[in-house]
Length: 127
Image 1 (cartoon, rainbow, N blue to C red):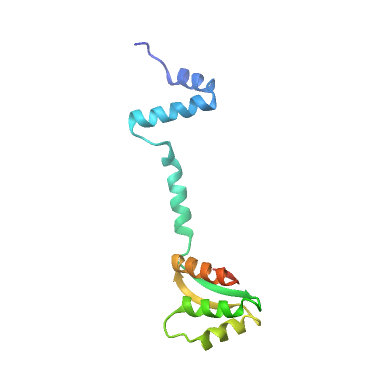
Image 2: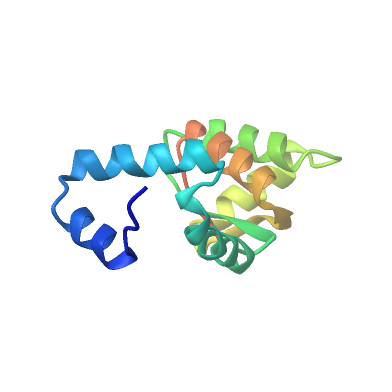
């Protein structure tokens, strides 16, 4: 077998098309049981850790037509012992300033709450 230097391999790779390079990478991955995507993993992990684990759901605006549906949605997402009257107070207060509907909740619960409120017609912010 002829000895090929790394420099010769690089010179040959420079002449390859994008499709040929993609096939070469796939062949190397399957032959040696490795993946070329490992280099980007630390970046993804760093981005995930930068995200907050808890957020607040803020009701920013409610249209007059959607008001009743948003009151029901606020009661539903807050749950517990919140009455329709308490939910109405929150929705009515939005006219003066944005109101926190939920505070320090995990991002999954916040996303569900946001979807429910938006479906009812509210403008919502998650921070």
